[in-house]
Image (cartoon, rainbow, N blue to C red; front, side, top):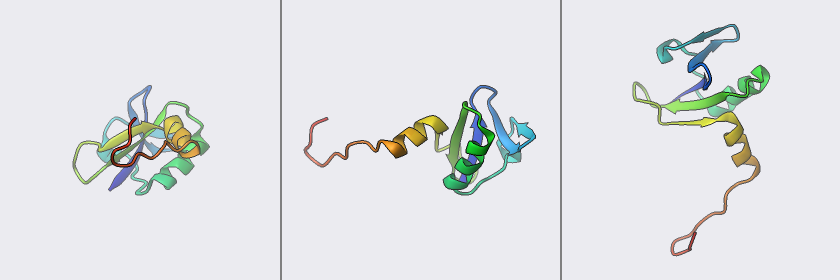
Length: 85
């Protein structure tokens, strides 16, 4: 699994604090979401998203950092089999 930060506004991936790239292969792989989030908070860029992918595949998921953090603070109601939405 690879974990990246991408700026939605510029569509560039984080490479280092001073360098961003359009090429995901050149981007910094944080490995784990918490590590990416720690850097994202330090950067303070409101348009960042976390991108997760496996090996050379397309991104598995991407979610804005704000949405991710909102989800942590307000976990959704769990549904069980047979329950109604």
